[in-house]
Image (cartoon, rainbow, N blue to C red):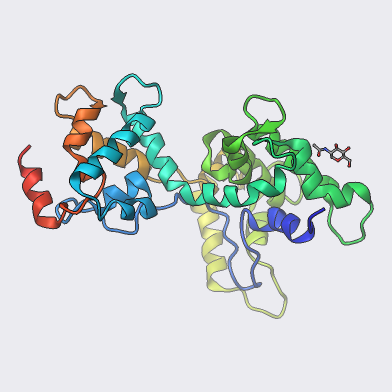
Length: 316
Ligand SMILES: *[C@@H]1O[C@H](CO)[C@@H](O)[C@H](O)[C@H]1NC(C)=O
Ligand SMILES: [Ca+2]
Ligand SMILES: [Ca+2]
């Protein structure tokens, strides 16, 4: 049996936010991971596009390749992106691919944890496996005296597991387990992220977050201390922006807008951009030839220095 406590505590406490000192603000908002640390300016080069298309680590590995080798590898990638193998890469497929590159660090995190939970090594994680590994000690001794409500935490995990388990067989594959561990990354999990957040904050259990609950969640008031300025600002934020229908409390919709703001979707914008720049015959989708034609936009190679990229850019 593995050491249970640190793991459990991390799932309970660190997944959504890190706990903090009384005067520091607790953050509930989830933002998109950036596609690249570089500026997106195609006049200066395609580094941003390369990072977005391949992920930053992978993008680097193309930098020393000959154009021929870059194109060869890109050809292999194109076949992977073309999920339904109809010979075309659509904007939707491209967006899914870019999202995947964006999520690479999350997948790596899931990979690291995978073997701890896949007890029977069959490449899947059943709810029972997860439960045994995470709550085994509790299940052996259901009345531990350490202040944690394991029954409650387990029920909450099971509910989230079922939500992530899209085909309902109580067994998670890689993608489903990723959705379980990182629900904020998945559209079909947004509902559960909102629900869990509301349950945490809604102390009087009326199904809404009122102003006191909202402030109480981010700020632990201590009598001898004066309220920091940001708390006053948050009170205004609540009334002006969070409580959109002005009934004095936040419902699910309003909570969703708060913790999972539908920011500008970088992956979608980049997919549109790549299609626009490469779609020679203007049919709205890309075939392999069109992509390989613009290989320097998608991946790097030795020849793709600033000047050359511009020259090639002007030919179209
Ligand atoms: C979970 O633990 C119970 C009790 O120890 C055991 O009977 C069961 O086989 C375990 N399930 C899995 C999938 O490991
Ligand atoms: Ca409430
Ligand atoms: Ca409201």
